Length: 309
Image (tube, rainbow, N blue to C red; front, side):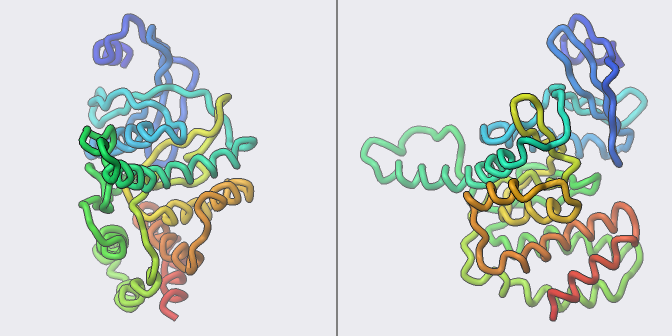
């Protein structure tokens, strides 16, 4: 491994450190190089390259906004013995505690960045002598992402779509239910979904949604802090509705009231917020069902029952 990293990264020296880690899906190891310490995520699955390329594109996109800190991605490589690995900057992180409120504010800044970019370009277009130059970053007016990203190891359909309701129903919930149907043929889930689909547009009545760059998988295990402030990692990014981000954050805890207060001081709750939050949690419960089994079936069906009442 050291020889591979030395060759691919163009380093003079590479040495494994005592820092290692891993989650449900990937394993990780830190290495000291003459260019600084790096962290390498590894996965032996054949489809790991697609997953890591999506994560690299996600980290790069968040990095460009200059709003919230993420590890700088370096390179996706083929792993020795099969699979792939993602090389990134090593950060000395600890559990999120003193910087929870700061993270709430920075996450709101991330979600507002594209909207502010659009407003700025519109203002410049109406100003004499402005608007003719090439903008550093382009305003994104659709929902989706340039590459496939994976929430867990399952790929997300990120094809660009003008309508958020269509995007969410057809490119987030429907693929998950297709997997449920293929795996278990769960009739009750499919029947509930056929009713719920018709009710979704009413949840978004009179709501203007500007595409926001999302982390996409922001649960407590994917946030931390270092000496400089909050850090988020393991993203599954796409441009979507900012409220979507808060769904999984609320499912497994790890975010205190100061986080939410700081976030909502910049992005206040719109009417119908709580109901839409349940709709967004449905994706994550279905995704967990498809990753980890039918232990998540009850939660998935309960949300659909409650939203169809």
